[in-house]
Image 1 (spheres, rainbow over the protein chains, first blue to last red):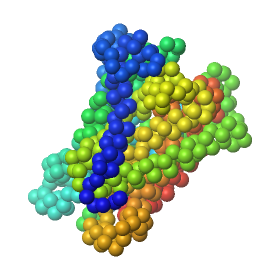
Image 2: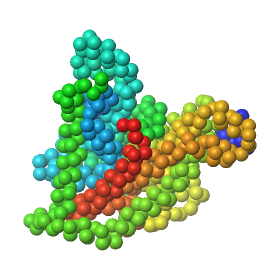
Image 3: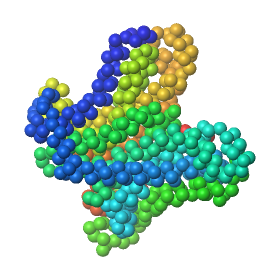
Image 4: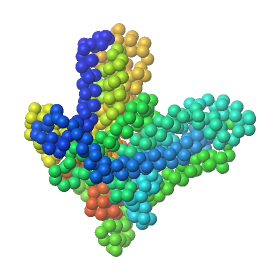
Length: 272
Length: 288
């Protein structure tokens, strides 16, 4: 059975895996192209006249467009902030010896594992008192709790891979550590920086709980919007799936770009 | 040589990140600890007062809290073995030589479920598992199963989506382990025996152990975190049948507005998480 030449069994298995992974997306997209009448047919129909009406209604009548823009603003800002704060920290972790380095590391890993509800409770109370509910800046800041660790982890790893001789040579020329990082190491670390930016964007874009708890209208994110369709009877399935499609497509594209590093990122580097 | 950098320089590099993370990651936790010692109900703010360990005592003696905890671990021990078995199968299929293009396609497909917005997975569940016009009942041969409204079926549905979303992760982690086995060692073993089980058990398994341990710890942490997908799919219902620990804390804090009690629950959850993180770091970051 386990001959080393590829058999038809292997082909069938591979096709089955692909089908199982992709089918829910196929169903999501086709449902988003159905009118409500078609979507509520029982049993479900597989062939029908597609329409883009759900997208038009969701985007412009129900305000999904505004929430997508909010999500974009928040995800891009928090990613940039995480890079600005995280890259120098990563450089220090890769290049300098100092006390508390281990604790810092532990803290980052813990942030990866802690349930967002643990932070959502106090953050809500604090934001309420400081009048920060329903503001973009609140989500931009709280998303740092998972973005900063991921940026620091990936970029530190990347900096470690750059030979120390380069630093030494530059230091002989009288360059400061800051210049060394910016002019020598950062350009070489760009692949890691890019991957960490993609991760940071995906995690922020996908996040629901903080968005749900900390926003109402003005700063509402797209996932929180999709959830608010779920109230009442006669759910607008086509519109819900249209919104879902709009939310999922950007992350899938980014995930495919970073697919080789996805496992490393999700395990914080424990598995290469 | 590396130790000669001045404290000021180091602080210049690390300081901003540490301060930012302290502001958003530590300060709220301190506030949560303070809240957990208060009677703090959002609908009765005028009655707010210090109550000592009362909230903790209520949590620790509360059956529904331990039931939610038990439910969370029950989900873990039902879905994780499935993910491991299926993931290992997929990894072995992908590890076999040949069919390069199809395998690349397969690896790319595996990336999709992991990256999908968790809330969208829940919405997809609503649509596909609907009793009347869901495609799942149709594919099962036109059966009439009530998935969302029945406690057991709802739980099975959650397991299904958890397995759908995270089996690819397990598969890719284990595949990374399989590719670490030196080619000549594996070939020599295959000349010795025809049994794939023997090769797996004695040649490949040692290389899979680190990945397995990582999966075990991370899946435990992620199950304790699980919120988005279940919230959009069942909201913890019907009854409390799919109310996992993070959902329960959210309900107590934001739907029954008892922030004091919810904070105590959150701090207990945090303590469990810290233990997990300690184990993870002990195993994987010895060199740091």
